[in-house]
Amino acid sequence: MFFTRYLSLAALVAGAFAAPIVERQETISNVVCSKSAPLDFHTVNVAQLQICGGIAGKITKCQGAPTSTTGVSGAVKFTITPVDKGATINISKGRWEQGIKAAFAQCGQDVPFTATFAGGASTGDVNTSAAFADKEYTGSCHCKRFRFKFTHPAFDQGERDVNFEANVQFTAGSLDELTLYTFNKMVWKHRFCPTCGCEVVILNGTNNAGGVNVRAVDDIDLDKLKVQNFDGKNW
Image (cartoon, rainbow, N blue to C red):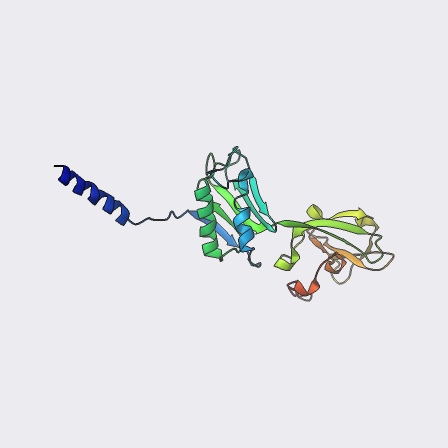
């Protein structure tokens, strides 16, 4: 009898070792892949564990029930926000890491993305993103009469658009003090320093879009910028 029971137990143990281990596949949707350069692999691994104040080591899920959270390391930033208004985040480390892995599988390893992960909140799903972290830039006209600052992902990563009204702040002089020049359809408003003649910003009067003269920005390597040509004749 003892021998029979031993054989049965051995068979169960052998069966357990023979059973395949299936890796969990996280459900994601609404995936939008960025066209910019990939994020740094090592920094990605650190940043993804900085959400919720840190989920490294023995911590297995988001702590504190935040309504939004970010994980930042170096030039990499992860963001999580619940889809349902008023919901809080309670995503587990496993779900979070598998969701990131699934998004990178669609977009390419370490390519920035936005996506929706199934679950992960007190009610409903969570919207997530992996992106280049914002960097503060400063700049000025040639004579320094006008100086400005703004935050934006690193320009050498292929990100070009600047939300002028939300980000650009003058630290010396003001927008209204710049000389205004328009031509052709009189839509784009070019603003120049009246002292040195340097163009500082350009604004679209129809939808408040705009940007700064990249040559007026400090510490920009123009050779690293990805140039996108603009058809000024047929726009």
